[in-house]
Length: 273
Image 1 (cartoon, rainbow, N blue to C red):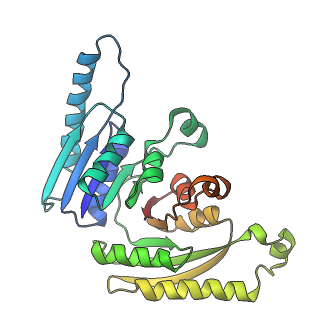
Image 2: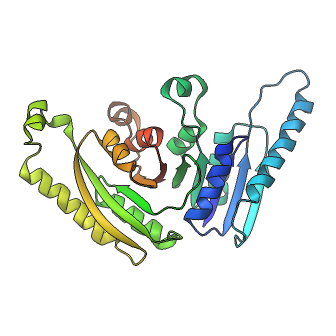
Image 3: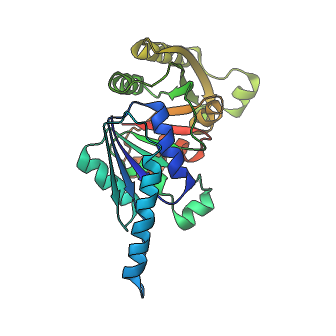
């Protein structure tokens, strides 16, 4: 696997580096450091100071990468980190982009922006957003909207299997948007045909991703997709979601489940494309 990992001065960057080392076997790692500053008096000296700090960060992160990794490179510059990561991922043809996150609330994100969310939104390759301390991955939640999501995961795991055996739960959520509150309260949540179709989806998905390195279970839930996925994810170490690439008006009206899950989930999120 060729992974591009975004770094800054935060502890979250170290967590991201350590986490990918626990999750997948790495062949080639590119550590990308960025810290954008405006041109001010004494800019050149300040820039050199930031470059030196960036090199120190890169060395610290390099020490966290598994020793068996064939190649480790670092790119240190003083420019926007999100742009640097996305440009590097395209240039080196990365298999995965990895970012740590401070998990900003909505107000803080609106004021200061979130590099990890910007990267996850605009990346054209699978992206892992690491939350919290690095930990072994034993329980993985795969949220599927259609069979193509399962096909994505199957292709991913065929090329990049997890380091350790995992318990994989395949979840699909029947949206409650078109179900009356009365029906939910009464327990007559969805028509039988709708539930049968959802159950068939997770069954087909389980058949597609079945493999020797994990056990598979399925689940069908009813509710708001983002809230339901994030709630189910609290019992897992990693959430995997597919990005369906909505653009323009469709994205504005319907939003992106994957983006919202990245923002709201308590655990790390892998967005497959």
